[in-house]
Image (cartoon, rainbow, N blue to C red; front, side):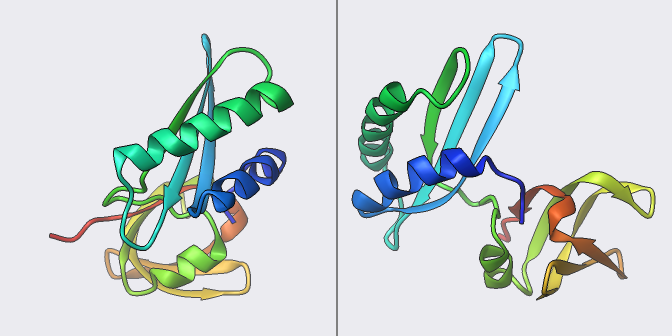
Length: 151
């Protein structure tokens, strides 16, 4: 599974679910001036700006009380978009047969980036075909994964 801050997920997921949305995942990116907490939500008929505002307001209050992030941070609530991020093994399974992009924590065959068709998900491994070559990638080595939109 793509590494995420489990403590933050445990705080955020019930709040998002209580509002009727699915929490796809979170990204916490730290930089020199603070952090950005990006929360990806979804629902069957898609996400609107009003949905993002609703979830943002709910999470802001809870995060102010719980204070789980050290220092300053910015909260962004977002729809997954066309190049939706993939966070969990269940989400990987949903996109078998689709083209995805991977960025790894460590190199496999001298590569950290892969773009290709997701062939299968077995146990903790994904099989991706890039440039007519299959690569087995342990889920725990995936830093980021995204669906590649097809037009």
